[in-house]
Length: 127
Image (cartoon, rainbow, N blue to C red; front, side, top):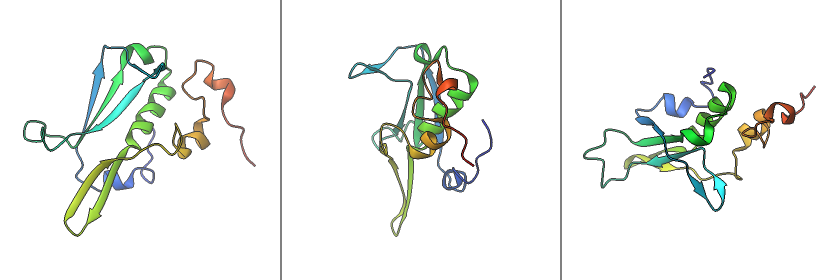
């Protein structure tokens, strides 16, 4: 993955622990293919799971993804990692979507980055 320290500075500067998992299961929700998901480890399972979040990639749904599409998927899932500093300490939460995608990814990769013809639908260069 390309270095994007400014994009994920909060994650890099924290002690948040993220597990990356691969699933051989196909997943759909509301008739839409799910490429990956980010979950916060609940306090109920924190005693046996040494992570704060886990990201799952559903391999059958991304088998045709290019390396760039896989990087974008992981970026997307990392945008769900929420860190809040409170007077009671760190609070982790799952960040909901801005839209069905995050604006930073739409601006850079286009809304249809996950489609097979994503290369043809990239946003136009500005300038």
